[in-house]
Length: 266
Length: 360
Image 1 (cartoon, rainbow over the protein chains, first blue to last red):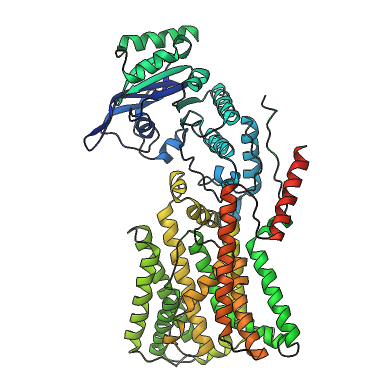
Image 2 (cartoon, chains in turn blue, brown):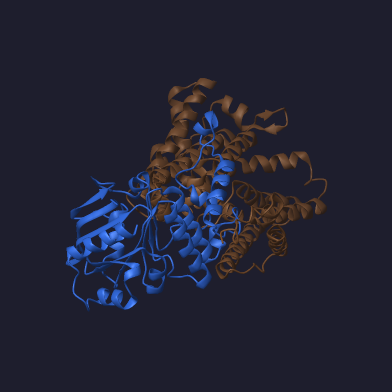
C-alpha cells in the first residue's frame, strides 16, 4: 500500500522555536490516522504545512508518490485535500448550502452565468445529497449557520470538506467542543468518509476517540514523529507514554514493521 | 444508522422569512408614519404631487444608499460619499464649462467625468483599505476631507452654477410618462440593479461572506482584497452618479450642501436592518430606511410642526433599530428566541412548528 500523502523531514522554525524538526508523516487512501502529541508537539503546524497553510523551511511532501509543493489552501483543494479547521471557518450569516459552495459557486448556464448569476437550486440539491450521504443532522438548509448548535456547525464544516475532498481530509480536533452524541456522529462520519476511500487525518487529545476510530496512530513530540502504532496493537497507556517521552523513540525499523503488519492485515 | 438522522428540508417559507426581516418591521413603521400624516392632513399630504416630491427628494440618497449597503455588509463604512459626490459634481461641471454648450454632447462629457472621478475616489478608498490595511473609518474620513478640499481648491470655494439646460430640463426636472420624475426612475434602476446583484449574484454572495467571516472567505479562495476594492469602487461610482443628479436637480455644485449626507445615508442603511457588524442587510431595507426621514420631514412641514423635529425622530428611530438588532444578535447567541418583536416571535414559532411537522 503506497502512501497517498507523505511528508519527509519537514522543518519549520518560528524565531527560536522549532515547531517542526524533521517531521515525517504518511497516510494511505482510505486510512484513518490519528495525530497525537502534547501541546506544542507540532500537530497543528504539521497539518498546516500539509494543507497549504504554512510554508516549511525544509523537507519534502509527496502526493501520490511524486514530490509537490502546496503553497495555498486553494492548491490543496485542487488536489482533493480539504481541512476542517478548529474554528470551522464557516460564515455565520450564510446558510449551510452557501457555506458549502462558498468560493465554488455553481453558476447558471449561458449568459446569466457569465453575468454572475448562481444556480441556487442545483447547489441546494447537491448539498442535500452531501448531507444525506454523511447522515449529517442539518436542521435547515436556509437558516444561517450562526444560529445553529456547535454540533450542527461541526457537521456542516465536515460535510463541506468531505464533499470537496476526494483524497485527504484533515480534521483539527473535531471532537474538542462536542457533547457525547455529536462526538459519536463525528466519529461515525470519519469512518464513513474513509470507507469512501478518502484518507482521514485527525488531531485529537482524546485517547478514547483515537482508539475508537483510527487505524493507525502517529505520535509527535517536539516537532518530530516519535512513534507510529497500529491502533489495534496499542493501548492508551502506550500512547500516553510515547507522547510524554516516557518510552524511547521508536526506530525507523519499528515504523516500517508497523506498516508492514498493517499491509498484512489489510 | 445513517437513516436515523436526515436533513430536514428547507423549512422556512417565504412569508416567515419576510416577516422576520427587520426591513419588513421598519416598513410597518413607515406605513404607520404615513397613515398618521395622511389622517392629519389628508388633502395636502396624501396626494400624488406630494408623493412625487418625496420620491424625488429621496432619489439621490437612494443611489448613495445602494453603495453604502454593500460597504456596510462587508462590515466596512464609507464616510466619504458626500464629499466624493461634491468633488464629482465639480469635476463634471468644470468639464462641461470647458467644453461649452448646452446640449447632450456637453452633458455626456460632464456625466462621464463625474462618474469617473467618483470611481477614482472609490478605487483609492478600496485600495487603501484592502491592500494597505488601514481601517475603513480612517481611510474614508481622510478621503472625505481630501475630496471636499480638492473640490474647494478647484472652484476656489465658489459654487459653479452653469449647468447645461438639457441636464436641468431632461434629468433634473424631467418626467417619464409625464408623471414620474426622471431622478426617481434613475434611482429606481440603480436600486433594482443593486438588489439583484446583492441577492442573486456571486458578487453579492462574496459581499455577505466577507462581512460575515473574512478569514473563512479567504481560506476558500475568495479574493477578498479585490472584492473589497470593487465594493468601495462601486460606492464611489454611485457617489459620482449622485453628483451628476445633484447638478441636474439643483443647478449648482452645492459644495457646502453635503456635509451630513454620509451620516444620513448610513442612518438609513442601518435603520433598514443592515448590520454595522457585517454579513446582514438588504437594499430593500435601505430604501425603506431612506423614506422614513423623507416622509417625516415632508409630513412635519405639512402639518405645521417645526421640521427640526425630523432630526430628533430619525435619531430615535436609528437608536431603536440598532437596539433591536443588538438584542436579536444577543438572543441568537444565546440560542433563544428574540423577545423584542411579537411579529418575529410569531414568525419563528411558526417556522418551528413547520419544522416539526416535516420531521414527524
